Length: 311
Image 1 (cartoon, rainbow, N blue to C red):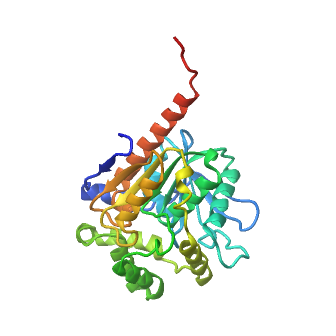
Image 2: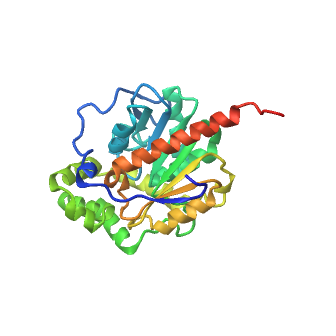
Image 3: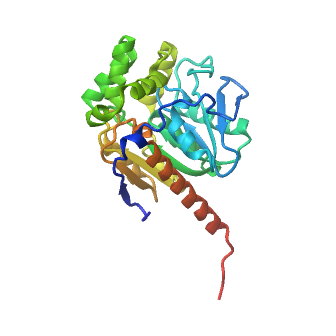
């Protein structure tokens, strides 16, 4: 990929898009919890290859990363976890959280795994956590991937009017209406028209089958509203991939463009027809792009370690 280039990915066939909808009975190989408070539940899959840590977004459990877990586990060591207050992770005593709090959580997961370093991937709010983690401990990251996320700042968190309406419906309507609202929030109408209803419902069940506890909603929302990394991102020098969804109504696509400009040497990968749910809508293509990004970062690290040759 050319430095700073934009790569647009075409939409795959329906069979590819739905390949990851049947949840495996055992997605993970190992599991455990972090020391300290709050205790966080983590899982791993894959026994060889580069280490990859996946950070999920607002109100979602870590296993919503299933398309990428399945796509990478054959040749990577993949780990994921439930953010504080979600799923099997404790929320801790603190009422209002910051991205720095959750960045420290991410580093505690790496410590619990015994990982000195890893490729870090975050989606949406998870991408905000990943930014703060990179700023806090860049030396522990092999690369950074920021999927449909933004730098924050004053009003930088605002979605489109339609996206804001759908977001509120997801969290405050009854179950059937929540499923419908989430589908409309994450995926463009053209994709929904072609998507098999049972497969889509299964995906929605995995994402919002359990309502987010109010205390967790407040804690995460506080962190999102206070998120602001723009003035600091220029410090980063690690290989970075920014993933843009051209039809995103929650994180407007222009926010990805701005994020890419903030980070030196960052590449932009665009899925023109994708919504905010790009990790599912283009699961296989995204996993392939991540694999290429990790491979390039590893090659760059090896080249940097090679002794200089003098004539």
